[in-house]
Length: 614
Image 1 (cartoon, helix red, strand yellow):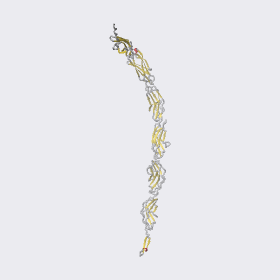
Image 2 (cartoon, rainbow, N blue to C red):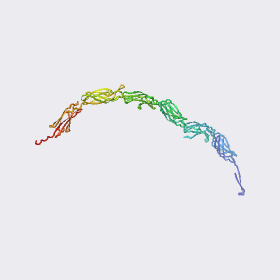
Image 3 (cartoon, rainbow, N blue to C red):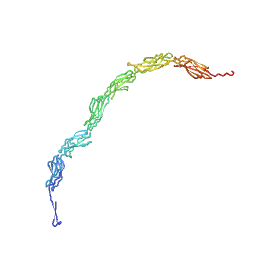
Image 4 (tube, rainbow, N blue to C red):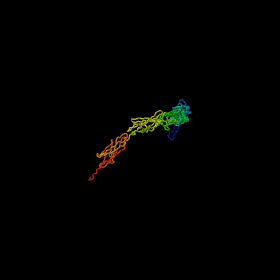
């Protein structure tokens, strides 16, 4: 637009007019800026740009040119979809604007663009397998009409305890690890190609799958013998194994060690006990128990046991009573062990006398002549078997010791000097040996011995003439009891007893005892005759005492038959009449005689004065 004004020569404002002239100057449009890549599609790229200066003539169209290839696309606006391209080829684009004058210069090249197609979702997802804390799937390669598949995006539900819930494998398979055994998981998959932000659609979620490991070993495996009389049965129990993600379908019991070995399953298979009824008593079996789930058979735990039944019945084969030993020897045949070591009890009634693993025993310190009844019972870990038949044994001992030995004089010589004696004793026990014979022996110092045997307990009239001294002689009687058992002579302990015998008697009384008084000499003399009997052993002395006026005043002894004492010695008193008594006894080793006495009067009264005038 051009404006102008015209004024006349007067040059006054009101004489001025204005005019306008419109001019249209045209040229080709300015060169556009480089196109902007907006979107990459299947064989298509969407571009846009800013309209350039049209240079006086309206822009009527744009032309896009692709490089490489030189394909062009005419577009009416500044946004244009360039189709017909080849996918997965990198292009740049330039643009030129057109108006009535002509075409502008080509713009600078755009940024690179790669037309591409979104891949299809995988056709299916297949479950491959499971493991301990892991699951694996695979799928066929996704179909793509564009760039090749770069990777797959796999999403697992629920999220694992550790690790990512999304994996991006480059091949059509995946394994998730770190999963929780026993938890059900599903996945979905989509494919990525060069169109990073445009993956394929997700596949439908898979059916649930569960990771699992082999079961753990059963715990507390116990093999227990069943207590029956016959044995042969073992019960095996255990605590359930850890399933480790999948239910246990069965247990396996492997039996080894003897007849019936093999692999068994309990009934039902998930039971935690098993009964083995084919065990051979006395054989140790090993039981290995393992659990099975979909992952396979887990480790085994084991226990051992053996079975046994009650032992058999022993038979007593020997009952021996050694002569004189107070003992019984028993022997028996071995009892059937029935799978367990056997010991034996020797019983008398309900009393257990001996426990032994041998098959014979000697019982000692028994009473001779007493009947003992014995049985033998076998015992093992299962208990007691049936007892043997009873046997009766009568042991023997040496005979006992005679007691109550006596030596009794029965015949006498002068002064009761023994000339024969009777012997006796109380019976000794026979110790079970039957008839007792007594061997006796009588002796004294310097005499004898006299010996003999008898089945009784008395021996009368054994002569001992001149054996016994009047002063006493010790006689010794020894008696030994003897029995005979099974041809063996058994001697008891010898019993001995000492008996002292003596003879003689105390003397008789002294005879013709008399007193004579000698006033001139102031003395009294006693005389007597020896006793008529000295008891066979003589008179050893005489003992005497004086009594004056009923008071004992003096005593003494003498071997003579007279004794003289002064008045003073025997305390005869002057000035009065004194009654004097003399008492005497004869004495020997056997004792004193009776007393003999004599009396006299010793008158020491004063002489009366003569009468006056006499």
